[in-house]
Length: 348
Image (cartoon, rainbow, N blue to C red; front, side, top):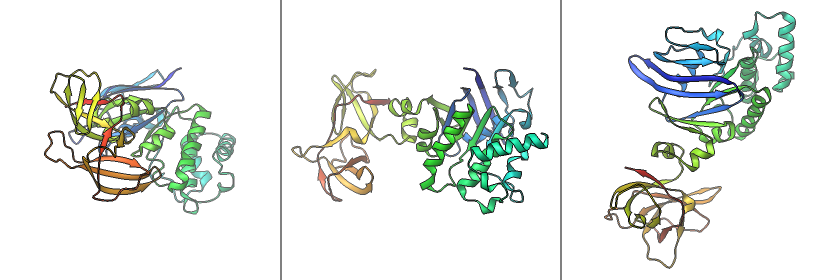
């Protein structure tokens, strides 16, 4: 499978501040990469650099295994064969749907433009909307027009910056699946930036978590959820709660009990344990060790935040998250224990 883009040791500075630092990744034809990370970590800057709107200070961007872009050998955005969809869609309000879609292919013949327009209108279910203006469209329709306009020049790579943030939540999931299927049917590679990890799980083949201008971990979304390599990744993906633990002969001891495991630590070394809600259980026959501090209602049942009763314990923690169909009340004391599982331990 051929590579559509390969990025090596990319560095980008803006106003003397390093925004991207030693970014490395590659993407094969037809693959979709999802970029997530906290605000200000460099996600949108990376898209703008790949598109050619921002110049890199060092490193290389190789497109289609042949066009290498460096700081000494830049390439104008219109020559990169890269399409981009912005958060606000950036449709031209004075142009119709058809005119917006054809904006990037003005140099083609009238017949070719009409054929391409007809094809994209049908592909994106816009057949009846060609003569409408953007303000006459719904958010989902505007999104489809933006995608059709980006696809018209037949880009090798499509960049999407928060493309679903303005879509009604009820329609978002349907549109995500629809656009993913479209890109797969056209065998187009794409990179999507989003703050919503659930969008990445539905849309992308590969996920990259960014922090402070670098890729912290890259891999299939399921792999990052099951095997986060750092607390930064687990924290951003909201995989569970973090509690302190200490190495003992049998494994790791915690405020909630012992977890048997083999870790590369010395006895009495401290570390942090990731606890997912399904790894906790209430034990009615034990003495209470936690108190219910907050109750929420979700599709998974009641969502409880629990705090330690013994705040002076050296392994006490601020709070832990727990889902249950059992009805508890705020202030109620309960006995919580850890279920046997393969723990994820992060060295302090």
